[in-house]
Figure 1: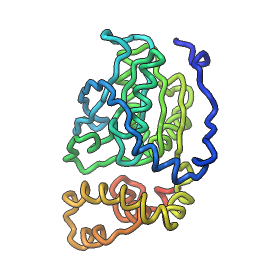
Figure 2: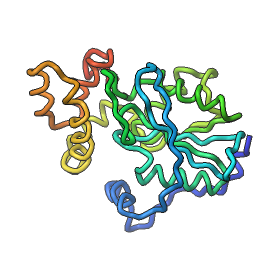
Figure 3: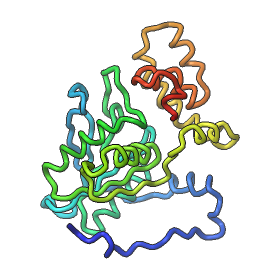
Length: 245
């Protein structure tokens, strides 16, 4: 396996003008980055019902069979997210093949099934890594935000049976309950929440047959309310409280 400890990585130390956490979150979105030369493949998800997108970047014209860097993106993210482009360009620069794996309904793909993605679906993570392990000797993974929750939970649940030799968790809301409360505060409520929630609501409305539930869904203003009314009951968690824990 390529020695990860030989990579020239530096500790993150922001300049004084970039100490604010909201500025750190928002500014990178407006910094233009080269678009990686993605090569898209589609594969079925763990249910065998939905095609999902795998966007690969190869270090050379020939697939490197040794090590693959895998990204699990954040809520409503994808390979065109600024952090995903940075990841893909960085992996190629360091000599790795890389792939951004999309969840159901992300990356411009349709999701006609009743099942969506959520922060506890470690079965899907294992399914993805099982597919990729057939092509590469070693897998290293990074999970960002919701993807970080997924990857951390996967590593904890699967332990020695986890299929990646290394894992990095970035900006993950590991304590979902506390994170949900923090999303009620001014900047999060008026900037982050609408950005994420509007995209989610557009995707799920056509899946809801109950007029009363649809009415409630359309009135949702916070992410934890969305999880309580939609994510948790639809994916077997029961209540939003159970899902957040």
